[in-house]
Amino acid sequence: MYSIIDRRELARGNMVSLTVNAPEIARKIRPGQFVVLRINETGERVPLTVAYKNLAHGSITIIFQVVGKSTAMLASLKTGDAIKDLVGPLGCTEHFEKVGTVVGIGGGSGIAVLHHLMEGYAAAGNNLIGIIGARDREMLILEDEMERLCSRLMVTTDDGSYGMHGLVTDAIKKLVEEQVHIDLVMAVGPLIMMRAVCEMTRLYKIPTMVSLNPIMIDATGMCGGCRVTVGNKTRFACVDGPHFDGHAVDFDELMQRNTMYQRDEKQSLLSSIKA
Ligand code: NAD
Image 1 (cartoon, rainbow, N blue to C red):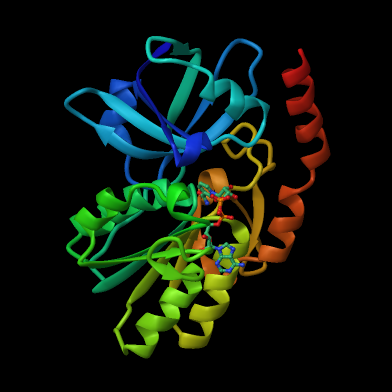
Image 2: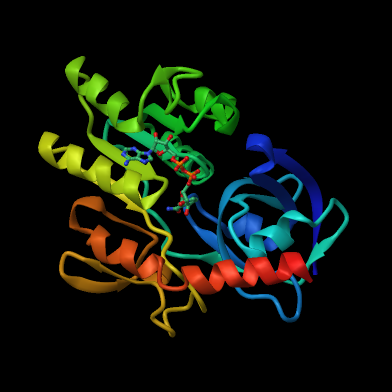
């Protein structure tokens, strides 16, 4: 059992941050890697990327959006409760190199994942520019944490309630117009955002990495549920990723695959609310 030592609500309660006692995972995990958890004996396996680790406390922090039955159950846990199983770290160990200026782009709950990745790029000695976007001011997370890591942080909101009025892609355009030299873009967020970022950076010829979160079941490379097409080859996000060259990803196929169980997911959430 893995006990919850801290629980916070973010973004009007749409996102929850849970800090879990998991010293072995905290010791081994590298930025960008993820864990798979099961809340109880009968729970489904939920893959979640780690936002921070704290070696002194032997803990990891996951930040997730409440989207279905399992995340709603996870969000209902309190400090002192425990998670039945926690497996990790999973996913490739990212090699963070000094490339120069890295622009990290995070949308919505993807900002939590981006934050850990940016720690990796910072440790490798890169100059970091952050772009974080949310629907409105209250949905924005980890602004202070990103500010601490980046030499410049641009914030966008879809409704203009805070920062630049617009989408994260408007902030990229602004950087390019200012002739800021960018060596690498790292984008994490909704698929539609990552696809839009990649379309733009392809035009500007800026290498771009994305963090993919397809449907994942066993997360060991056995089931093939998380397969994605990258550069016309089938890759498994769980063992070959979750980070890929965004310009080579078949986003259309991935978007279609990710909606495959939408009806069942909705049904499962509704029946758990009724129960
Ligand atoms: P959202 O819909 O609120 O969008 C967040 C931001 O993304 C927007 O504010 C905007 O700036 C940008 N964006 C959205 N659509 C865009 C478009 N068409 N063009 C350009 N920019 C666009 O995001 P949300 O509801 O918080 O959803 C977060 C998503 O991130 C979820 O779908 C979740 O699955 C995904 N996510 C991915 C990972 C990962 O590892 N890849 C991790 C966590 C969350």
